[in-house]
Length: 260
Image (cartoon, rainbow, N blue to C red; front, top):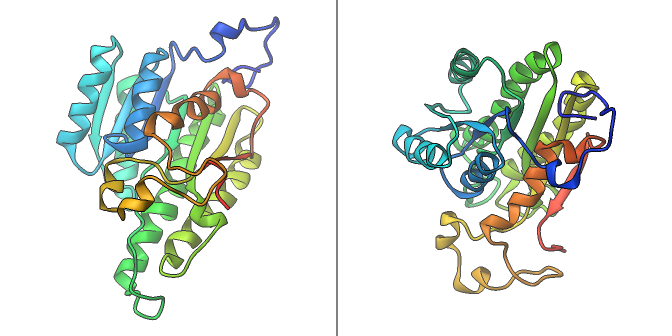
């Protein structure tokens, strides 16, 4: 099955399974961290990329990297927790490229609350908005257009916090657990031509990790015993974005070093 949902008439050579030539990817939170790594890898595999985050200058810097690889790039500033921004983002992307073949709901926020009782309504709404409400709306808009067109792949970037929740992260853990559930909802609603999957990411040494305690930057309670390097998200993202995962949908893939 190709990314458009059609079963190939002949086997695809292994070297071409991860080829994204002619595809357009939209990555939220694509200007830094894991999102930027995915932007780089998609462009290197041949895709044109729509890069969105709240800061336009950061999106433009990422777009320059994509163009330096010979691909087209569209930087768009948008707040994923605001539905009006997402409506504008989708319209802008389709106006520029005519289609979106890969959507990555990567943007997120995970602030530490003093306690559940001391979590403010404002903080709760922000966390739910970015981690759940926004991905719901964006996948709804893009998934419907994909299903009405040539199909595509939606990748929700979740967190080990949904599978191994801890106090002080209640809204975040709940939002990511809800995002995991959305994967099943949209896989059923927009299949068979649209595949929808989740990457459950563990701790990665992105720029956000600079605020971690020193010991957590070198050790984790996991089978591998260490945090991931940002580029270690790439192979899973490419797998789910490409024809290599033609029979994978509604799946949750843990990329967390074997946390327990």
